[in-house]
Length: 69
Image 1 (spheres, rainbow, N blue to C red):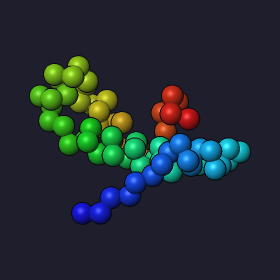
Image 2: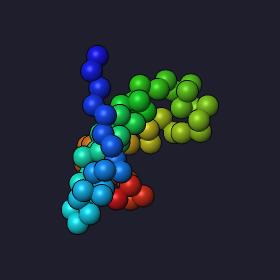
Image 3: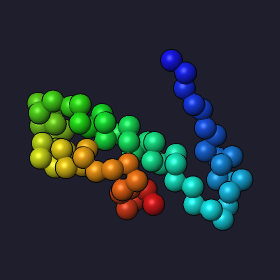
Image 4: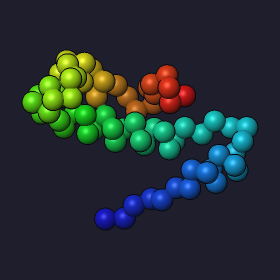
């Protein structure tokens, strides 16, 4: 399996004026996919409501949480 390595520091230095959220989109998409894969027992261990987890996992990748923007 091939992976894409992105130097986030270089990207931010090279594009200081433009907000380029692709790296954040990829990270959020992966996190939401992992959240969707957790069992109800695992969610309970983490103190996360299963309905809230499903709602978060169903959000599109471009819908970033406020703290990421």
